[in-house]
Amino acid sequence: MSSAFRLEPEVGLHPEQGRVRLRTLVFIRWMAICGQTAALLIAHFGLGLELPLIAAFLVVLTSGVLNVAQVATRPASSWLRNKEATMALAFDLIQISVLLSLTGGLTNPFSILILGPVTVSASILTRRSTICLGILAIVAVTADVFFYLPLPWPEGSFFLHSLYLYGLWAALVFTAIFLAVYVSSLTEEARSMGMALVASQMALAREQKLSALGGLAAAAAHELGSPLGTMLVVAKEMKEELPPDDIYLPDVELLISEILRCREILQNLAAWPEEDGGDPYNFIPVQTLVEAAITPYEKLDIKTVIQASSSEGDGENSNPEHRSEHPMVERSPEILHSLGLFAQNAIQFAKEKVDITLVWDKRTISLTIHDDGPGFDPQVLGRLGDPLLSNREHAQKAQAPKNQAPKNQAPKNQERRKEEDGDHMGLGVFIATTLLSHTGGKVTYANHEAGGAVVEIVWPRNRLEVATQPV
Image (cartoon, rainbow, N blue to C red):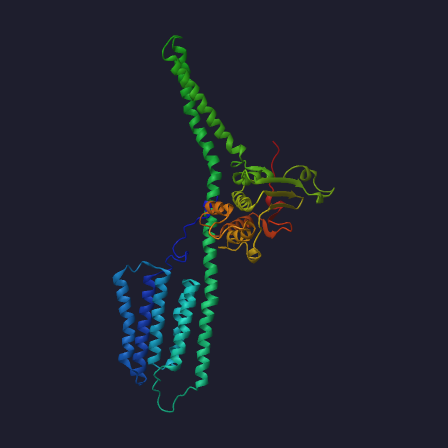
């Protein structure tokens, strides 16, 4: 089951994968070049401001040369990796800063554009890249406060007090920090949720395919039954026509026995979907559902105890059928997948025993999984259920002092877990919580007073239980 979470992210989801096409950045840069050129020409020839046009146009020309070079060396439809996109935006930021220093610094009304690369980075790049570009923007803004050529306004017609310039500097600095931290945090969270949603859909699709195998087996058994029956009839007729001492009689008898064996196998396949909860008769007791989800992950060295009972709080007025019989539920891929994942984690972290308690009353059905391992790390306990969060490293650190393993030799149980887990992306708990919420279940995580982790799932009984007709 753990292999289901080794997801190969789509383009744009993984930090090292491409997140923006070269065509997009080239198009934005061409727009910036046109705008900068128009602004310089209008200010110089339209407004009569004496600007250093040659130096300014050389700065603008560098952006054009970079665009041409990038398009000439690689396809415009290619994806830029995070580092490549960061370097491209850093160049744009420096180019704007140099152009502002030639045209008035922060007194230029277009000085706000220096935050453009930071805004683009906050929406498409990693948080680290955005913070780096934000720091670069702060340095560039600070440089434009002290090193710039003043705009040649008509004498006495316009003046900005130094206090206003410092206030404008502070506003740009705080805006850069805001974009680098707040907007990038929202983008990272949305990106994490998107990747977790993809993983959830893949895990659910896998369970649905496994459930569909029962119906496929029944259909195959039905289709193959007719030709096998014909073969059996022909083989029996051949046996009757052969004399008792014929040399081919043993071969015909062997053929009949093998046909009968194939028929028995197909009958078992046809019966298996119904016995195992196949569609459409996939209603089983809730304890059977729990056992089906947990059994594949049991280990010989870890004792797994499942206890199921009706709550004593049902009262005398409750339905006697609810008190005496197990609730019948649908064999749900979501529940099988989620309970299997919780059981797998509990068994991996347990020292000797995992207790699984199933209790129901007239209103709710609750399941508690308690292991005797190190428990959840308090630092991540409140964040369990968020995507891209893993508790394995914290649990291993919690066990290290007890095992007293040398620095160069990890404990055996930790090495075993590393081998079994592989590359864990921290999506398991989020996927399980999300899938169970679709079935009406509410999941809570806690540490037991006696030690170990506790996972409790509570469903409304009327949401989980299904009504079955007596046979």
